[in-house]
Amino acid sequence: MKLDLKGIHEYQQNRDPYLLIDYVDEVIPGKIANGFKDLKDDWFFKVHWPSDPNMPGMLQVEAMVQLAALSIIALPGNKGKLIYLLSADKIRLIKKVTPENRFYMNTKILSYKRGIAHCYAEGIIKNQIASKAE
Image (cartoon, rainbow, N blue to C red):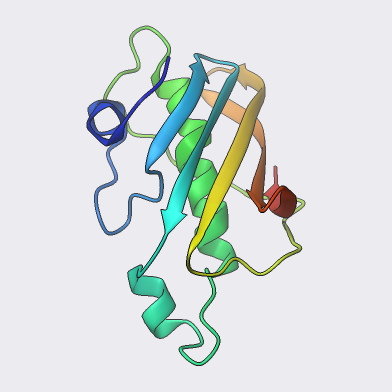
């Protein structure tokens, strides 16, 4: 399944300016979701180190969580449900994420039991891992 912004809105509860996904290239419900955010003149660049704008690490994690959540929300009976982040582990912020880049994200569901998912995600800029987390 591929989702443009309208399709993302059917599943994801977050809205602009906090929706951090522009397009979903692939969703396999309960398994993976891959997509991207085009970084332009986003609100966080104006306030997070204005003299050296970059996407805050926790917003990178949030973007990856939003995308991973789509693979759970896409499961039968889950459309429109709220998904909450319970914890984030093994966070690595490796490369600065700056304006005028496409922040690709690849997410994978490692397990999903009793309504709790364990996920892995990578954020990629210019074919290099910029951030990752579980």
